[in-house]
Length: 335
Image 1 (cartoon, helix red, strand yellow):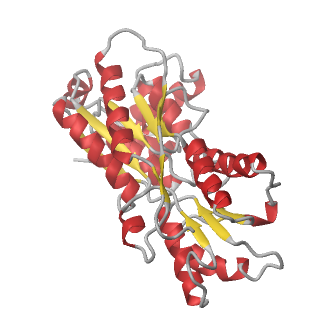
Image 2 (image 1 turned 180 degrees about the vertical axis):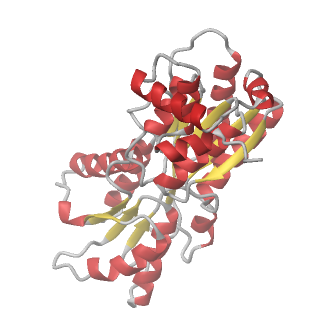
């Protein structure tokens, strides 16, 4: 007896997503007539039969929440997950977790895996390599509730929960300026990410408000420890080298500190360094890192509670953007 083909088999054969196949088999009007006919013809030719158990499960709410994060090891995302777990547990929901490893292709796979597990809703922080959002748009069209947190996209009509990245960056750079720094280098994530845009905007506005014109030569794409260790010696060799660094996260700041100390310079006497996040790295670095408290736990709780509210509310709710305030934590890496 030949093995029974599945929706995933059809999707792989035709080069489309499983959710598109599912809707095409149901003759969903959002799927083009040509695609519906192609899918249905392939399914018939290959003797596809719907799984009765799966269909019955799909009609029931499972009380399972799917979560996709870029990196489970990163302290910020670990804090977010703790907030999600606590909020979900109190509401009697189970959490299924996937890691995209900052890869778009892996993110798509994560979504398909979670959809196959009949999740009731989805929490997502988008990977830094994701610039296309069709996989999430299709899930939204299938009426799957989605809440984005931290890494969000204006292309998706969803609720969002974010830190106040702008004010956090503004406070950090203002502190550097007020302690005597004049040339502040900025290490950011890829430019298309909202967190980079907002933190860069705070970095630039703080300088302008202190009478300093931001120097584009001091803005770099660098968002992890290894990259910072490699880049920082080159930055320090610039003709007008920086006297301080503001980085998009604490791991990157730790790389800057390592590179500066290896060059024989002292922190903060010679160079000031400020990060963003306030995780374990900030409290265990030498010297302890001045940084912006990002409140990952609160972000996770707020995102999870909003998702559950959307899952359980039968009426259509307006989309909301929740902003969690940040706080500058002054330690010994700045003057």
